Image (cartoon, rainbow, N blue to C red; front, side, top):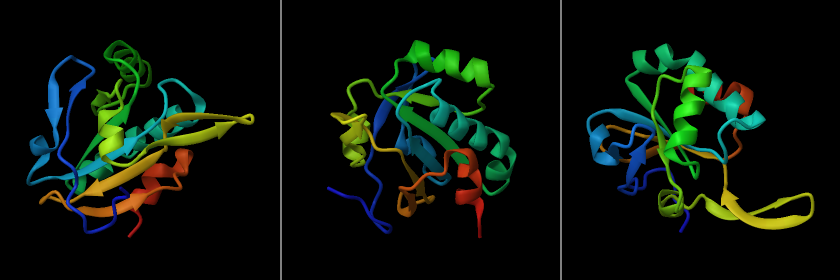
Length: 150
């Protein structure tokens, strides 16, 4: 099922890098940037995370929380956060259950090989849990600008 602007964001529960549970309900009454990325410490994923990190104050000023989701485990996320000084949590979606809820677990191709993985996508969710924006063509180095533009 493909989600669209105006849809209710699927409720999710996951485990953050610190081993604590996090859910969509934790953000009721607050806007959320929920971004899905393939792998910690890879070029594009690092550029994307650092773009969001560098504009974090701008997101906060506009009332947005940021949460990243990838199939990496909690330990990998902890290292990624520390190495790049990320001020937002990352969810360990090792069984890709959240990615499947959001329709971003799918077939990919690399060097002629087909495999299943995260389709890099960002959802902007409003205070009531409604999807207000979706970015499927993520410009990793300028992702914050893609989201903050008027």
